[in-house]
Length: 473
Ligand SMILES: Nc1ncnc2c1ncn2[C@@H]1O[C@H](COP(=O)(O)OP(=O)(O)OP(=O)(O)O)[C@@H](O)[C@H]1O
Image (cartoon, rainbow, N blue to C red; front, side):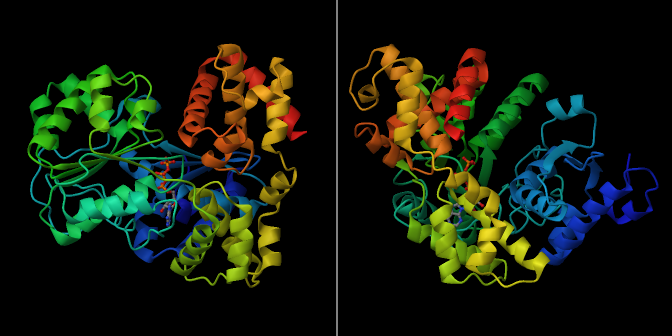
């Protein structure tokens, strides 16, 4: 076992070069991050670097920290390592304890709920909360102020603002859905943060659906359902992320249903997110689906060009860096799929500018993003995907746009939609348009379905591999 980064230069085994890489990374992070954040989250990490430097595993003390580091810092660390090493580096996070413990371990949940210690949401700067203190699990950085508004999220944002301003009334539950990295999590945290700012005594809880599942399992094993119920049923605002993870979890669905009914009955508010609209959810009981849909359901779309530009400029400013508008336009034109990727591109550019001590310019952005741009230059078009998939499954290209529904046609069409989402920068509505004017929700459904089946059906996975290779050339 290696020592932490601050001791790494004393390593005498063959790993010391690897520790040097990690040390360089932490030195950079120490400069980039506020001191308290660095000391709380980065400094305690222990790194294991593979002999060829292709993989860095960071050992983290507990599940809570691991989730936080994954959400807040993993992208940045990964980009930095890659930048420093000059080649792709796989970043892994692991619990410092035994793996078997890690798998079954549920991050600490307060045994009882008390009034918040202060209006300081737990999670961000705080270490573990004091025993018994109510933990909201809110990230204070994710607010309405830091969420850029645009056509893509206007409806969802204004509904969320309304809920934060007067919870328990209209739009209950609020169901927000959309593709990955579009700001759903950010938006629900913003609701919680705003309510707490207005009413510091409100009982607000943000929880990822997977954590809720773990909570149910734990209460079941320990027979502590009374605590569980007290904890959830007494909330004023429950923010629950990625409810598609409830699929096939019957016991969890039942408990969630109970919590849902209890909260609505006492006019507490529930805000949920998912990767699809309620009726598109697979393997969730109908009575729950209809509850999900009983308030307001709103979509978040991929951001349009102007919004992407604004996001880049704002994020750069938050990092105390200058991003000239022309550079932001250049990046926004080339990185189109979601905000998380936009953030990744920005991080690469800023790191590249720092390491090379050059100002941010279009030329510099081009260099920093050369891998990403070269993938795009291969220019896979939706038309090309439709033709390739139609040839492969021996159907007519015209069937890609037709309304025909037999499985022999509908399935290749769904596969083509999936590949279009995966291999092009087109948004769901754009893809729907190119498939005979179909609704974006139809495309989202196809993308989810094929993506999930791919994990389970070896034959489908192989076919997709062949198609991807053919298309990528
Ligand atoms: N409109 C926006 N303005 C500023 N930042 C945004 C905006 N939308 C998303 N982001 C940022 O993009 C990143 C990804 O967003 P978030 O995690 O909320 O996505 P998500 O929709 O929950 O994705 P997933 O389904 O993968 O969890 C976050 O860092 C978030 O702060």
